[in-house]
Length: 452
Image 1: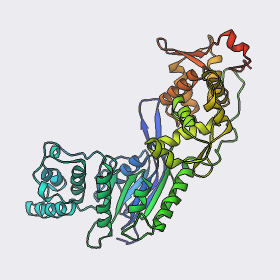
Image 2 (image 1 turned 90 degrees about the vertical axis):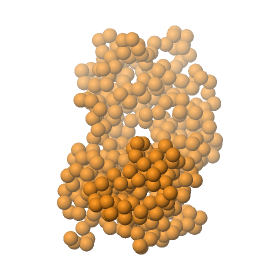
Image 3 (image 1 turned 30 degrees about the horizontal axis):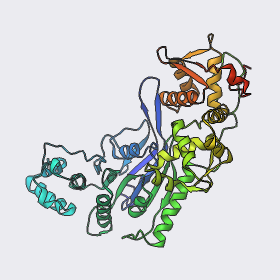
Image 4 (image 1 turned 120 degrees about the vertical axis):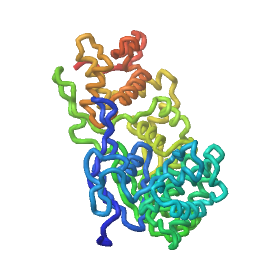
């Protein structure tokens, strides 16, 4: 075998999930990546960017829709023989002891070999005294140690871990991270190659030699960042903090670019009544609620606030906060210079407005979006100015094939009702344009543009 041949080679992989015959969710788009010996690769990105799907594709647990995965130069067919997986939720069999759970991958080996390997991995993860305990007797940290031992006993070339510390308390997670770091740093330990999923930047810097930053919708590689810090790594060192800060900037810019990229024909309007399926930009209103955006505006002060600080302050995952910020920015209520979120003058006006005026301001901004222009036009061209949910889902699928129609429908409905653009008949599953009182029209707020 050529020593330069990578252990795993992922080439132009795309993957879709089909929830039904009409809906296809593209979660990975044209992903190419190699894993070589002694690589420790972190897959870093917000929720929904395809990290877990990618690690399952490279381990052979999922067959990609398009593209190929090779193991040691041969196309992978089924589960990879040299890869072991540690899952986020422990995945232990409750009726088996620690010993029974760990031995599962090596049941085909002679008993003496099984016992020798078991003693080695139990010593490695520090569970020697728990060999005959059942999972119900173990803490979360101990259960994850069992999962790691079960992966190590197969003596894999590559250890894959899907957010292995996210279900643990902070102190237990920190202990396990340090132990994994010591294994990677030890020249005596055979496991030196690892791929792991995380949304924790510090965790990626602490463990990885290469950090793959993924962008979402669809999931794709935005940037690969080498990490040359020597083991053991000190989180308090200037070099470590600089690496974390660099990744902050990359991840924020990847998910909140300073300038939105809109296709040249995104604003093109087709005036023919029988052709409402206009091309609209792929950047759609994120799947968040009006309450989340308005709550963010109410909590932000006049000074710029770091996006990661906001995530910590709200106690939410970075990707969830990014979606709220994206929606607020799309509506003109926020700007995102660098990795900060800055409320705009319009955002301040919205935050300080009365309920009625707030609805009017939100409505004005929504009607500037191509997706709401399309929604209004689709309703108007119907014979009775009413569109069924089923019809609208078909139109959304045609206009935005990479979006999730039902989730997009729920988002449009929530915003449209909040801003009094549409009303919805739950019994008939029908939408129509909201009809305002004459008194409201007299205020001088043209809420829906007149029919062209």
